[in-house]
Image (cartoon, rainbow, N blue to C red; front, side):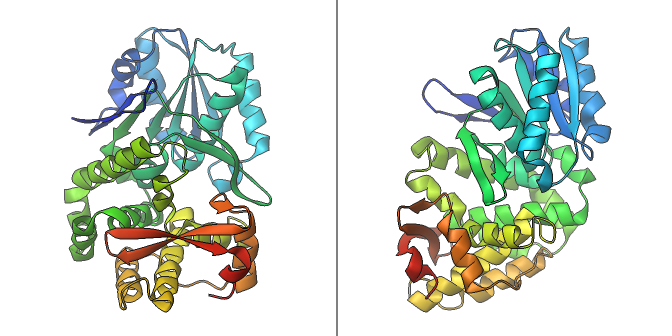
Length: 351
């Protein structure tokens, strides 16, 4: 077992990483929670796989549980299911002295974390991420949100969990496309902060090699996220680098109504676009975009989609990384090194 400590003053918590630990969920929960009731939120894909394991562990330890299942998919990260969670949790009799657990991927984690932040002005919660994307990225750092018709993650909060419990074995049940989806975020970490990780990913030849190294990969990504979040919890400065590829990626997701491309697929295309923009501006070394294309293809991620500059500009206009009339775009100075470049939103269309 490995533990990482996220040192945010008065909101410190551990990231626990190991194999086959869902059956011991109650042991880790008892380290951070001494109450009675626990609402476990999952989705229609994850619930049948792991719902009984988690609730069984909790109930055997004396906790009263309520398993709440939402439909799988990005479209569930909306006000409709947020209010459904509120209703189910209140019917369960949940109070601010109880606990909420997010058991699933990024959608479940974001939606549940925001419900926990806002219900009764705040109920403690725990992240148990079951997808690669959630394990290396969305479960750590406390950014929680729902989507609006105008864009992704436009209503949200910063709400740090009490603990993050990562069971590597969960990755074995992922469909290939979902695994690739998470690899986009792994590639992002190498691109922005860890050249050796990026080179390691470039040299992995198949799924067997990937899974032989996946424990270390997940640990390294969580460690990078931990360091960045500790330095800039509220996304005002250095934490923005974690959004590499996301301005374009969110525009792609919205343009295709969150149906055609997954988050990771859209971010992968966004990283390629950011590399090309950087090269055109003379800020990113020539050949970086081609290198990004090759690594994305190595993990079965798309590299091109149809989207107009106007559609990108419209998305930038409501992007959370914007400041007044400007947009902060994350570009590479090289593999493992980034810069934050500020553009006026009208200039953004002319790049």
